[in-house]
Picture 1: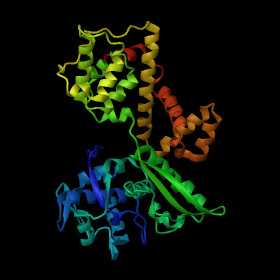
Picture 2: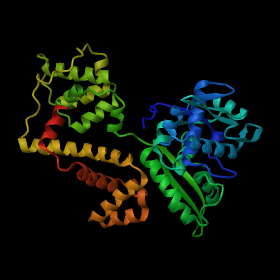
Picture 3: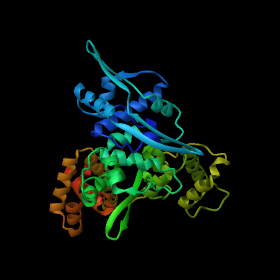
Picture 4: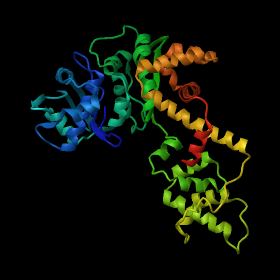
Length: 425
């Protein structure tokens, strides 16, 4: 299934549509995704009585199913779900209730099928000009695999701009229908709700989204009575920040040739404007070759200081990256070089293994974790996987160990040809 490109697609969700409490029925994962997508399309089109899209465009995002009956069931769930809210704005206090949608149609003419929908007036008005809204990306919605994960992500994202970065404090029974999407009470005791819904949702949000969620439990004696969530923005790693930039392998190699490690070079490359990096490399080489100045003790130190101080902005520098043949790379003994390249490939494999594991369904993910558990010699890992299931992947140490194991299982030992390809690439 080819999904639409949702990399930069985001909807400004009115806060009234966050933390939906169903009055009857159940809000499923597909319904949550579909509702968010309909709001996104509606916001793109502006104020209209009726919105429409081809069924292919919609279904490619929300489900692998091609059955229009599935879509109709989602619309039925939306019709049965009410949104209730209370807003205070100065001296004005407003209570409101509305359905998710007011009308939906599936229209087939020949081989073409179109879906059309209308929004309740209050939802449409708030959507087009929201006073209070939460920005949500479709890409993250598509990565989350349970309705509880999506609901938790939406609720916590709402509080990301709050000064306290802490959600409202409510009884755990209040949170249950809002996360499960079920109007009926799923768990009679908190420990079952936490084990089956809450902790897996937190683990998945922390693993695949752009925020980190921390559970705050409030007790009365030994009993958990109420919950809050603390939310922080996830800090992207240097590798992730680099991925959003156009990659210039020759520029990165030029930084490394100044005597900077590959890891630090990647970080400097990712954290600074590429034109400034390019000019600073050229400035460093010019300074090193300057006949009337004392020799540089360290190109690397000069480069980092010049980059931090943005010396190249004021200096007349030729913006040409030094060709790879102009300066020889540091010569390492063959075996030491192989060890170094092997370590770089292993580090990349860990990232690839994690992405490969994330692309699989929950059952397949758990099957791999159990296989790793059964072969692991670390008692703590075995206990954590057995006790926490998918939530165990929040542990950095366990996640790294699992990915190393999964990479070896998938690709085997690093081969000489792989090293050659890595160096050439």
